[in-house]
Amino acid sequence: MSDLSRLCIHTETVKPLQIEEVAEKFAHHGIPGVSVWRQTLENRDPQKTGQILRDQGLEIVSLVRGGFFPSSDPGKRVAAIEENKRAIIEAVKLGASLLVLVCGSDPDQSPGISRTQIRDAIRILLPFAESQKIRLGIEPLHPMYADTRSAIITMKQANEIIGEMDSPFLGLVVDVYHTWWDENLEDEIKLAGKKGKIFAFHVSDWKVPTEDMLADRGLMGEGCIPIRQIRSWVEEAGFNGFIEVEIFSKKYWRLEQEVYLKMIIKAFEEFV
Ligand code: ZN
Image 1 (tube, rainbow, N blue to C red):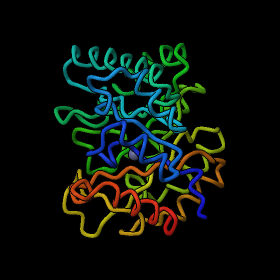
Image 2: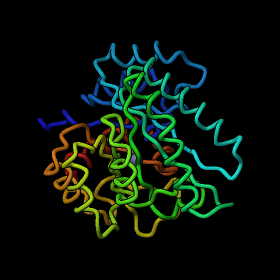
Image 3: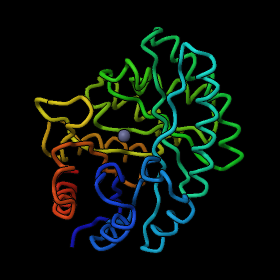
């Protein structure tokens, strides 16, 4: 029997499934963890949704995603903080202790200015997150998303902000898809681990060639990311939480999701 005790799958990975199907199918296949995307909660009561998942024995690892802080328009920056407060409340109701931050970027201004705005926003948001006992996880994204999705593109940039704020409620989300290319990856993982700041670990694979910047992520083992090596670094750095499968793929969303879940489990066993 294989060890799936640390396997978590994002709802976005199996986007065609309704949350009731997620609960039932994950339980049936022995998948113990789920990270819930906010889209999944649209027009749903987060508290009841959390209960549906817990009733099947699932642990809700995180709510994905908050962030998108920077804008050249000050009104939009204020609105973004309010939206993130709503996300934090949603996490509380859902029963997730971590909100993943995709920090955002505005192509109308330099990434440096966007990063300053991200810092400012997190500084404002953090006391609210602390009051609600929700941890915030900064996820650096691959530089190909630096235009609109994240001005934080390296582990170093994330670690710097986390170091400045020095709160037990602010840490790092390491995603192999976004960080595998970084020559400082091992050192930055060590640094974050020393301070107990690795909050989450996401896996998928980088397909060669990648045909769609957003929705052509590979199953583990299908691409060029040294997933096992990176996993060993985060574990040596003290991380022993869930390993979260986060794959956006038009190709896999078209499959029968039951078949796809079996493929995910096989890839997890063989390549993670
Ligand atoms: Zn991720």
